[in-house]
Every structure is written in structure tokens, then in C-alpha cells.
Figure (cartoon, rainbow, N blue to C red):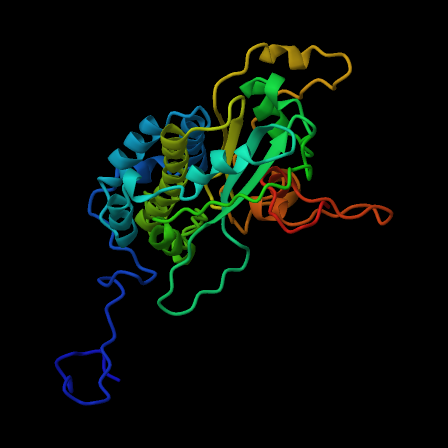
Length: 341
């Protein structure tokens, strides 16, 4: 083995060892001489938190064009392998396949009218990749009727507020409709994000970059939010092209992809405000904005910052006399496992 290509390069056992300061895909990132403005913004945790909340607010409000334009503008100043992959993943490259079957399936559905659908984008815990294989993100899809919650009389604000609760009222009450979707077009970007070597920025000097956030880390954050944006754009396009059941809303969001948000698509229902005034039903909790915590930061104190998305995705502990309850996001975007825990 020889690191110098000029010595013994023709030997049958010669293996070239790339320079980590020059080769992409290694831990080192080729930082530009002048830092990108977003690297300066992310230098402090508060700056990154503000940027993330602004981007999340755009997606939560359904302003995908603005989110896309913001991410595209920021990515233009980066030229790492991940940034280039993001630039190659356009809105029309991602599709929500299978949505066109929804209305025909529901036309034969003999149960109560479907008034809400939850659609979550996630990755399975502890992914194991084979060499050279890519991994599509998973979709968590469930359909609901007013028998589990008064979706038809709830406003968008009510639905978002209910999502913020530890136990949404519709938890584990999905209708047994055989309907599935896939999301082709994101496998390469999703795999690159899962394998990214710059998933953390601890701000303790160990990154070897002074006066700026590491470029690789900023690209990772941008890529995560671009993944979420492309997912929501695909859902919006599917609804525009193939429609949605009358009186139905789509509650869409992400689970454990380091860019979490929840939004509601579909027209506001007539008389929606009535749901919050019925004495027989509990009032909805106000939407709370929890303190932002960088994902997967091993220095974070779990007792003071609250559970991470991974912890919330896992079954929560319950008193011995009761069965374990599914976590909020797992209940919100319920997997079809045949159980109703």
C-alpha cells in the first residue's frame, strides 16, 4: 500500500490513499476561503435555531414555493457533494405514486366517510445498508373518519393543536382501508443524508473549523429540509392532479429526518369553529412551540430539552398495570401493523 501515486503505481497490489483534505466523501470538508453567510449564521446555536424555525414555519403554513426558493438560494453558495445532489433533485423528480387510486378505492369503501388522512415521511430506526444500495424514505399513511375525531368540523388550527398533544384524539383509530403510496425520487438524497459524516456540530472546537459552522454540516441541514420540502411538494402536486375526497383534509409531516414539521392540506370546512365550542368535547390545547434542540446532539441534556424525535418515535414507558403507549409521532402517523396499541 502506498500513498504516493508516483511510486509503484503500476504494482498489482498498489492502492491509492486519497488526501483527506482534497477528496470528497471523507470526514474533511473542503472549506471555501470565504465562509458562506449561512455558516456564520449557524456558528451560534441561536442563529441556527432561528433559521430552522423560519423554514419550518414556511412548510407548516404550506408555503412550499417560498421554502424551495429559500433553500435553493442558500444551496447555490455550496459546492460539496451533498449540495450538488440537492441541486439535482428538483420538485418534479419526486412523485407521490398511488394517490391516483385513492378516490376509486373510496368509491367502493362501505365504511364511514373518510374525513382525514395522515401522511408521514420517515426512516426506519437503525438502518443497515448493503454496499452500493440506496434507501427510499418510508411513508406512514392512515385514513380516519369522524367516528374517531370531528375532523369535518375542526379548523386547521384545531388539527394542528391536536397534533401538538401527547395523545391526539384519533390515535389508533384509523379505518381499515387498503391504500398505499410510495415516494420515488428521493432515494439517493435520503441515502446521502443518512450516511452524511457531518450530521453534528458540537461547537466545542473539535470540528477543526474556526469562525464558522462546518460547511458539510450546513449542507446536511439544508439537505434535510430540502428532503422535507420535496415530500410536501409531491403531496401538493398529487392532490392538485388527482384530487382528495370531499370534506377530507391531509395532515402531512415528517418523522425523524432532522427536519420535522406538521401541516394541514385541504379546504377549511364550513362551520369549523364550532368544534371548539361544544361543551361535550374537550377544548383544544393551544399550539405550543417547544425550544429547538439540534438533532442528535450527544451533549444535549435529555431531562431539560425534552425527548428527541427518535425517543418520541419509540414506545414510551407506561405504568406496569397498563400496556405501553405509542409515542406521539408514531400515533399521529400510525404504521399499519395490524395492531391497535
